[in-house]
Image 1 (cartoon, one colour):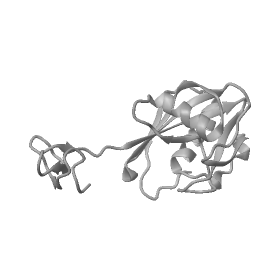
Image 2 (image 1 turned 90 degrees about the vertical axis):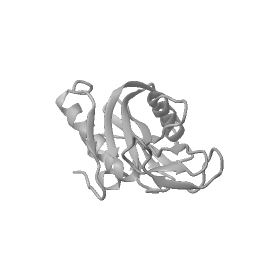
Image 3 (image 1 turned 180 degrees about the vertical axis):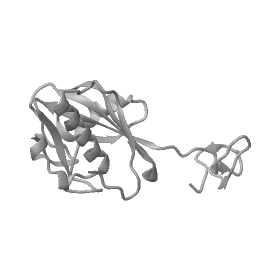
Image 4 (image 1 turned 60 degrees about the vertical axis):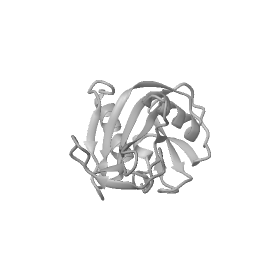
Length: 184
């Protein structure tokens, strides 16, 4: 950040009074501009014993498979954002069951939240950000073609819980994804 969005003056990086971190502070109006992590919200869309995945039509990771997810918009709850992203990317109408995973990806300033979601019907279609959309069992998931570690970790937790008959019984799973980390 170089200029204050409030008054247009230059920004300085300094530790404001009563703070402990470097912040972007306006040299003129003294407004402190905080940088906070972005929330990525999505679903694990379930139909019978299958999970719906999308093949990405955009970067990053064009051509790789992912759960339907994207950035939370201002004014939207995390649940509503996850439902919207699922409809936009996968054309799937879902009912949220519960928050399933929360993954901290601090090195890219993100927090990823995935909800268990029951598909209302087996109808789906690729949106503009997806090349294709398909249902997969655990055995048919293209594990080596998954776009992100957060998706792989969430799917591993999901299928382990499904095999154990514990879906929704263990609460929210959480972990930190470190730079360059590979899951499983």
